[in-house]
Image (tube, helix red, strand yellow):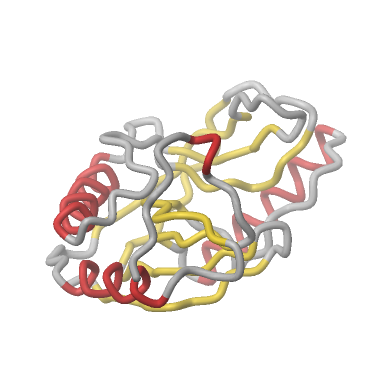
Length: 192
């Protein structure tokens, strides 16, 4: 039996979050983590940097579930992912800033000053495939592509950084264990 998706943000709760993500390459992830540690030190932040294995850009949150995502939802998400036809594309992050957040855990993030049009285009493509599979999840027509470095009570004003780039060759479906700092990979699809 298929589960109904929540109608409001207040209803999104659970211990597992089903996400489509883009990951930086391993060398880029190590560089990002080193930069996060440096920023933490120079700004006196207390937040723990995200580990290189969890650094990502979220494309879509399909839903949040107690005990894990239902098998039929994972299967439909995987079938939707299989329909995606897209060439690899480049990502360049050149801005550091803290996002506003209602709690005291403000995300310190990297983003691209140009809005990352290739990421936006891929997001639209994936969104269309998910809509056809009746998996709208936490849908937005436009996203602010970013990589979260850490969360902290202090804010860092936006500033330019030396560009960090990689070519996206794949996208991944993960079960993110909320509060456990762990991703379980459920599927991976190559762009070509």
